[in-house]
Length: 422
Ligand SMILES: C[S@@+](CC[C@H](N)C(=O)[O-])C[C@H]1O[C@@H](n2cnc3c(N)ncnc32)[C@H](O)[C@@H]1O
Image 1 (cartoon, rainbow, N blue to C red):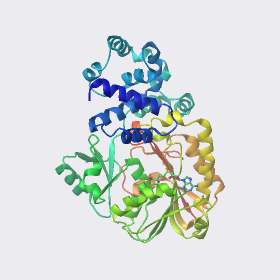
Image 2: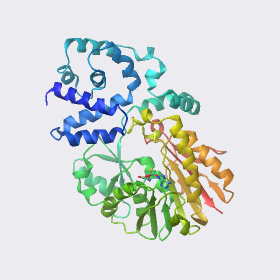
Image 3: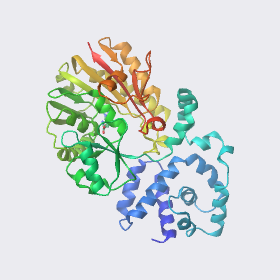
C-alpha cells in the first residue's frame, strides 16, 4: 500500500477509536474486519499507531493545534509507528516542517501532564503511593507489554515447549517468577503454532500466572474461580490440579464463559465446570456454601494495571466508575468467601494499581470477616519457590500483599491478598 493510503487509514481508524464509545481493541478488530484487503504489515502499523496515540494522547493533543489538516491525521502523524522515510512519503511540505518542529521540542521543558500522559485523577493517587517511583511507572505504562505464554503444566514441560518454539523460529526465555511462563521476543503469530493448537501454551501475562499460583490448588480439591471470564486463570488452576478434583468457573457473563470453551477443549482438562451465575448471591453459589477448599476472586476492576495493553482505559475510566466498582468488589468478595470450608484459602485479586480497589477492599474485608485470617503472600510465594524480588508490600514486614508493577517486575500491575478460613 502507498504510504499516503496507510496514513489515511491510520487517521480513519483513530477517528473512530477516539470517540471512546467502545474499547479500542474492539474498534481495531472491527476496522480490520471491514477492511479485509489490509495486509499483516499494514494492520500492525495501524494498530501500533493507534495505541501509540492513546498512550501519549495528552502530549499529542498539546502538539496538534500547531499543525494543519484534520486532527486525527495530525495525531496519526505524531504517533506513526513505521519507518520515518515511509511516513515522510505521505506528508506534504508543511506537515514535514511541523513534524520536525515537534521532534525538536525538549521533553524536559514540558509540563508534567505532557510527560506522564495520565489523567490527573489517576496521576495524583499514584504519585502519593509511589513517590519517586511514579515516573518510572508512568514511562513503563507508556511502553508496549511483552508477549508472555503459560505452558500447560498438565500436558507439557516448559523446557520442552521452549525448545519446540525455537525450532519453529520463535525465541522464548523463561519468565523470572512464574514456573510456567515463557516470554517471547517480539509478537509472533502464536495461534499458527502447533504448540498453541494442541493446548500446550496459552497467552497469559506472567503476573496473571502468579495469581493462579497463589491459590495453590491441590489434586482432588473442590475449587471455585468466582470471576472466571474467558478462563485465563481457570486453565492455569485446572492444570495445577492435574485435571483432578472439581473446578467451578463462575461468571455473570455467559458470553465470556463461552470464550473459555475452545480454550478448555485445547487444554485437555476435564475437571473444569463453567457456570453462568445471575449475580454473586446466585442459588448455585448458596448451594456450595461451606463446601469449597479454595476460592479465587479475580474481581472486575478498572483494569488500570493493564495500560500497556489497554491504553484507552485511562481515557474511558473515571473516578465515579472506580468508586462504583469498589462497591461491587466488596460485595463479590463477601459472597465468594461464604463458599469456603474451615481451613480453606481465599484469594482476592485485581489488575488495578489503585489502593481503593486493592488494599482498601482487603483491609475492610479483614476487619469485618472475623473468621478469615490474613495470610502473608510472601510466605505463599516462598512455598511455591517463587524468587522474592520485592513482589510484596503491606503488613508489618512488607510481605502481606502481592503488588506487581510494570516498571519493577515487567508484568502488568496486579494485586492479590490471601486469607485462610479458621
Ligand atoms: C478480571 S475479569 C476475570 C478475568 C479472568 N479471571 C481471567 O483470568 O481471564 C472479571 C470478571 O468478573 C465478572 N463479573 C462481574 N461481576 C461479577 C459477579 N457479580 N460475579 C461473578 N463474576 C462477575 C466479569 O464478567 C469478568 O469476566
